[in-house]
Amino acid sequence: MSAMFDVKAGWVHVGVDPLVDAEQLGETGVPRLLEDTTATQCVDLNRVFLVGFGEGGRSVGVAACSAPQLITGAVMVAGWTEPSCSPNPSVAIRIVGADDDPTTDTGTALDEVGGAWASAVAAGEQTVDGRDEDTLVRTWRGPNGVTVETTATISGAHTWTVAASLATGSFLENTARSLD
Image (cartoon, rainbow, N blue to C red; front, side, top):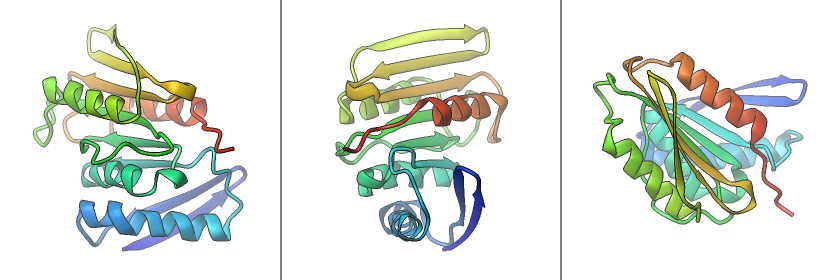
């Protein structure tokens, strides 16, 4: 695995070029990278987010279980995994996919994966919002403001979409966790 740092006022971006599979990257690679980053950079542990696309999305889900103490939220785009744990502390989750993506199933599978994460973080009843004719958003709200949200769009295929940017942007701006 290789990584690149980009430090800007108020942000530390770490890009990962995975040379291992998503499971191994999420279980050991990303947690170690997070530990190294927080040890060498001034990082607000209330606002550490992982964002992954495709297999990177799967590794983000695995890392949310492997190192929840280091992660505030995880965004899985065009690739996701069901939780293998109940993260403690809870991790906010966003999952984004397109109906026409041949590598994923956004139909009932996205609802099931969102529901599994909601159960894992003790999030409550689901609300559904047809934002527009092309976008369906499901949200589960949990204790201390932790949410799980899935966004399914009709089109976008296996690419980073406008819906992915909007879901990720609002997630990063509006999600924080108190680790006190």
